[in-house]
Length: 385
Image (tube, rainbow, N blue to C red; front, side, top):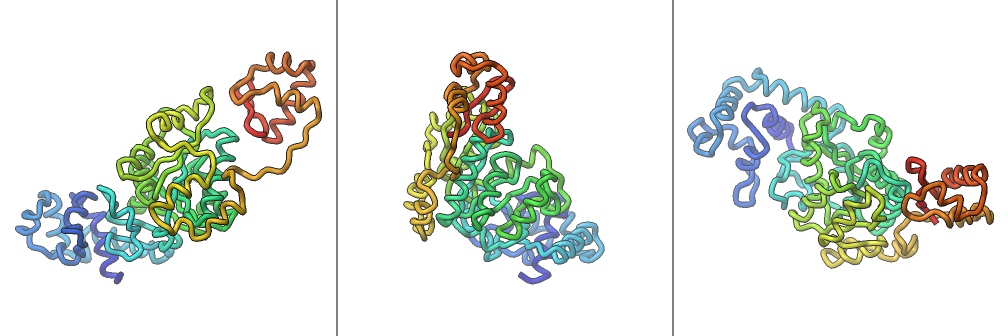
């Protein structure tokens, strides 16, 4: 793409009256992409005939008269300079690295800002999403599934949020796979800011992606739009943990609307962040307990997901995080056996373990440090073993 073409695509984001729908309408005609260099030169009558609003027509005419000095042109030049200085690519509809699956959704973003390897956007992708307040078991599941799927040839796509998203990204990085983070802000922002180091690692091994103009802050209204890209890029979406009212369920709904597969890991009926996944399963999502179940489902769509199917089996057939063997004392085993996979009150643990309170509390502390139990407001939930 030439510097002039890049400038003109950026210009569209700054011309008053232009929306993503306006750009889609002008750029996508009969399945072909019309470069803005053509229609930005149209006379006003033809612009109006194409359905542009009065404001959009006026802004184009202003640019035609002042191509170097109007406010939109100055802003586009600043953006272009920033992209060049920071090695960030701009992918419009007609760029060879624009992901083909994303172009198939009803409202593909006209422009994608990509930091990292834009070619990986065309790899077979599986989205992994879930709760920001995930349980330890949920984090382990997200990491285990993401790592195995990456080893099977999938790029793992998520939103770089706390919890499940971050666990999936990190697990893929650890096994040397490709991971893609879709942002709900401009590509020049990092959100949440605590994930700056993670963002740097993702850029080095995959890609950061945003449809929003430079300088756009993270806002709640941006995340449903971000979620449609996460699902649109992917062959399917895996929901690890999700409450009944969560962005992950929005992503799952969008995936269904885009004719993508939806997978969900079941959880305890007592766990609030499992209610959403259990609801998805009840309403038709595919229940999965192993990563290779997902590979088996998606291989029917495309054989590229199984370029090396033995890699999944060689690493693990369970799809869950590989753990070292657990060695417990008799007292520790008795306390752990007294705890279920739903919150268990302390008094019930004491009765079942037949040990005094100080001993039980000490053992619970040790089990929690080892990631085997989780304290939930005074009750304990078993999350491992």
